[in-house]
Length: 100
Image (tube, rainbow, N blue to C red):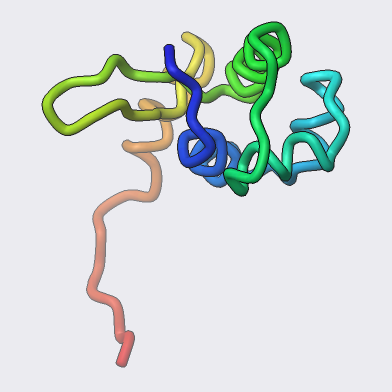
C-alpha cells in the first residue's frame, strides 16, 4: 500500500480522529504527521508502517487501487454488523415527515 498524504487525510476524516490522536497511536510527533499530510515532508518506511497500523486500528481499511485509484472504507466487526442489521428493522412503519 502506497500511503499518500491525501489518503492519510481522508482516513482521518473517515475515522473522525484528529492529528494528535493519530500521531500518538502511530508513535509520531504531531508536526511530523502534519508535515507528511500537508505534503511538506516525508516519513521513513518504518514510520509509514506504524502510521498505516494506527489508521487501521481506528477502523479504516485500505482498498486496492483500481482504474479509479486507491480507496478507503470503514470496517465493521461481526458484532457491529449484527447491531446494524438489527437497527434497520427498528422504528416501525415509516411515516411522512413534515420537514420544510
